[in-house]
Image (cartoon, rainbow, N blue to C red; front, side):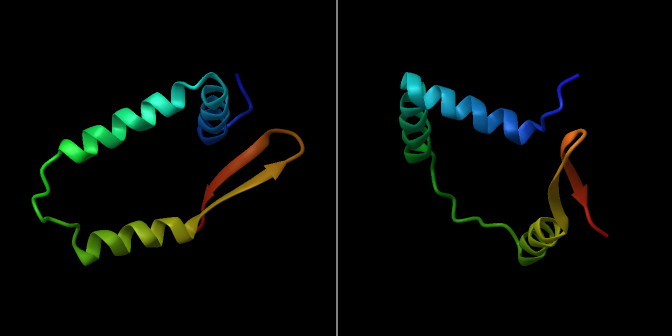
Length: 75
């Protein structure tokens, strides 16, 4: 079993793709896709935004000597 979190994997993967030029093509594809999407004027409610911000305040990741990074949701 790997001792890396998903975030570390994603960051390393993106860095590797930058060197190959693949991420540039992916970024262009996503930007084009977003430009083509209709803007329906809807946005998340204040309650939803508050929930997301509360979660981000309670999330933390620490590096340990024995297992690498540990992700925590502080209560």
